[in-house]
Image: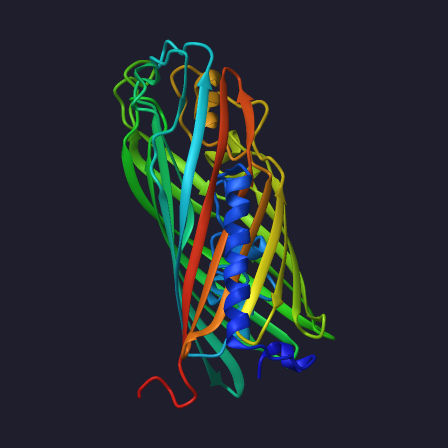
Length: 429
């Protein structure tokens, strides 16, 4: 039985009307993208959370109590995996079109950078998100297991086509293999946990003084979700830091450690999130959800030099227009985490040039956008046992100066996914 039918019956509509509404919704979404300048910073700091997921992405990322795709359950609050039966498989990804502009108003002679103003030449970014969930019984309790391959973070800037930048470029990519389990302790209470093994690739960010290096790290997440009744549920999670060390990635030509390879320490922050959702409004057709996330940047290596602790707020809705068609919308606001004053060290490294050099790095990691709007649609049984979800959105343009370096971002993203459900008789035929 569909979740909405547990609240109120749903009036059926013809397939022709379904398609008309679907096409109209797509036109409205595409029109909004051409009318509004938006930004690539779909992340909180560097981390994407569930902002790029096929369904939750359209709801502003709101997914900590009632996620609408299995990838969001695996990647977010692990207790919500208990809401999915199985076997269920989700294959999705996102296309992020970056536009990143930097203006340097003064020279940095120790690193060879002269004044310039240019757009980053970094190409379209891809963010895969794949997951599988299966529910079984263990010791008389319903237990759900999940496994996912997720994009945790990603950014890239490239100004090597500008001679005055002296080859400025930086990129960072974090991919996670997440495995977790959730158990229904009571008909209302579910708890869950997940273990993450992540690999990250860092290239840059010190001009002509850093190279590409890879490292891996672990992370743990604990969560709970409680059904308050009358269609309302509340959920929350705690997520540990992810600590990385990139060996021999930095070597400066001058300074006290000239021509000596140095290691760079880089951590992802501890996160705490709380979400609430109600799924019984408007005769069971309307789901509303809201999340709040706290990110502890102050205790991380590398990023504590660039960011301070941050709050993010996510709001989303889903309207079931017919038995097969769902319309989604969302809005998110996050504090600007970038520091107004930075130290002269970063990640255990003292860069040549001191504070101006750290500010120049901060301009390459400028997660300054604060307002994000999203929308999308979902089609149940696009073909038998396969659902389709698509999301479009972005954040409003913003700019900020870090000493003599000013960054400005704009762009958009499209996320999509296919979810495959095994029929009641199983997947074996």
